[in-house]
Length: 191
Image 1 (cartoon, rainbow, N blue to C red):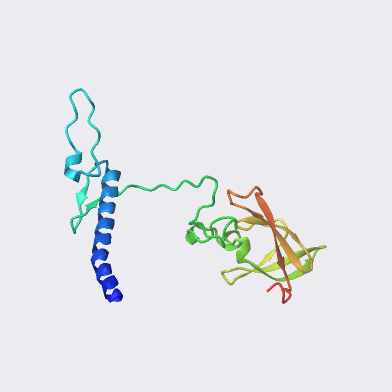
Image 2: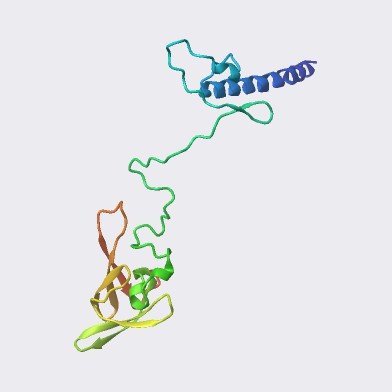
């Protein structure tokens, strides 16, 4: 008998709770629109007393279903020193944006970034070393120290490595350049 009584009360109370929640939502929308909570939205725009400046009325439109809908408002992001949530974290600080406008790059080695070249070999030539690089365009380039890439300069070449001084284009970083080391023979841990 008690179970029947409780189920009957729950059936009676559930519609009242949802109606109260709906009334609270409508009252909150009216308050946000500037209308008093007890009055309908059409009564919110009453004429102002003489000599007083009339408040600006916000348009409240009736949405399907009879509830009041607020006009859309713009949103602006204020970072306040935080990072931009739309910047890819994997490519942050890698220099120039290499993915945008690939057609506007110079041809050859000067159009390749430091992350797009691989050291394939080194040779001793006239008392110094030259490097053999393979680019993302599947071409092979013979380079010396001092030659330029898209986002850096080849600083030095040794028997088993090449060092590139890469320009860092990251507004959050204090350093403007960093060294990128390309190793001839990678160990298993480095892969």
